[in-house]
Length: 156
Image: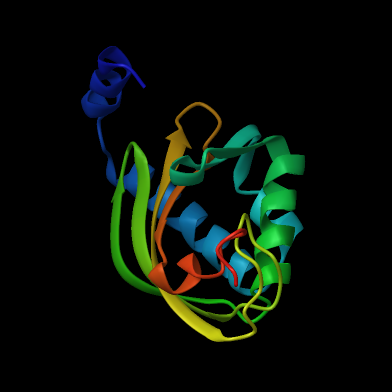
């Protein structure tokens, strides 16, 4: 995102109605995620949404890509729980930070399954599409030192 695009986001006006709309859509998204309801989760996203994991250089595009992202995540961590620790809601979207608690049962990205309980932190930005009233996807950063030993090629 360039400076001009960032300034456009900064100039967005917040109204109580817009704040409520974004907050309610985020709640629907989170509830669907907790319930493993992928169609419900996709209903909160624009059709051209993108899921970015910048630190590993991965992007999933569109509803098919978002569904694939969640299928991978939920098969690797079938009992995953997100414990919200921080949240900011504004006309640009939602930013949240959460503790993740899960059992690492399947391969995720380059991380081979450990079959152990893991805990790590995620920071997620949900950019808001003002015209369509949905999220344009997620930008996810994770800090998971417990998984580093399970990175493909690091196992002995």
